[in-house]
Amino acid sequence: MLKARLCQRIADGRIPHAQLFVGPEGSAALSLARAYAQYVQCTQRQAQDACGQCASCHKHLKLIHPDLHFVFPVTTTEKIKSKPSSQDFMGEWRQFLHQYPYGNLSDWLASIGADNKNGLIPIEESRQILQKLSLTSYESRYKILLIWLPETMNIASANALLKILEEPPPFTLFLLASQDEKQLLSTIQSRVQILRITSFLPEEIQQYLQNQATCSLPQAEEIAHLAEGNLREALRLAQETEEGSFAIFRDWLRLIYTQNLSELVQTADQLGSLRKDLQKQFLHYGLRTFRELLLVLGGGETLLRVGESQRNFVEGLAKVVKPGVLENLYTLFNEALFHLERNANAKILFLDLGLRLIPLLKA
Ligand SMILES: [Zn+2]
Image (cartoon, rainbow, N blue to C red; front, side, top):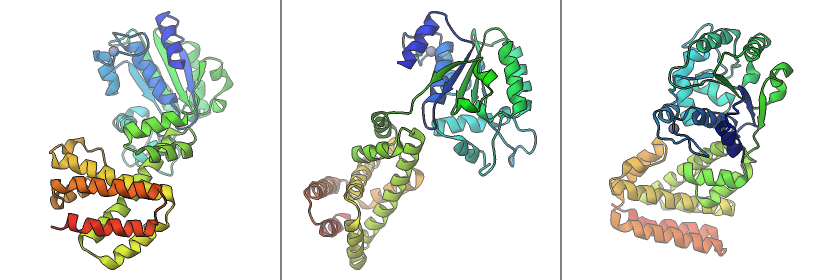
């Protein structure tokens, strides 16, 4: 709805020169500001969205549009030892936005190797802003300056920004993406149009996890519930769960492959003592791994959407699992899920499953 309102405003030619997108961590504040910039500069705007096809949209998706400038908190690092500015970190910034579109300040600082440091927007930055904005735009009618976390400006840089906002260069738009407008100077707040972005709904997070993070439905539901509207937190949990399930599943399959019966009994006891939703998650993880395996066996390795260690594992599995037994593997795991739902004894169920897998994984 907010997006529709923004689009309508642009269609009517009522483009405010400074807008503040404010929303809590893990909300769409930054991604919406980026989408807005893309929409303004799109050369074939649709009623509700940018076309996604024109040259301008392509440059936005690659974060290389010459009329879109970014300002974000920085700090000194191994690479930049003094007077850091956004310009020095553009390569890292692009990578960060691709990898963590909902990341927070710690994620960003970690990604430039500055964990445990404070990031801020220094006064030098405002001089560079003025310089960038004094140039005429290259390709679009509007130059856009997107400031991420303007609340990290110290008083000197905030005052410098205020001056620019009070006398904005022509055809320049300022987009501020903030997590907390109360930390901004009130004089800045009064110069911008404020758009409040709410946290994501659990359904939205669930959808995102299923589409983008390859979570199973029960997993996505569980995480969406825990994340409380914070998509960044949800993605972190999804990754953690994925890594946890991966380690347990990999070790368990190794026991089966080496026919280590005594440890198989122990692992069955451990799995049997987990919470039921975690047991189901384990079986779902197995099913997903078999799906990846099917892709590898079918020569579609590039379709794998998993991390590197998981990919290596699946490729290793492909060498010992014959395509003919994949169907049996699916059936066994689905049966186990079925019985688990119906309150089968979980310790026996996991031992039974392990034993049945032995002949299927034998070389
Ligand atoms: Zn376009």
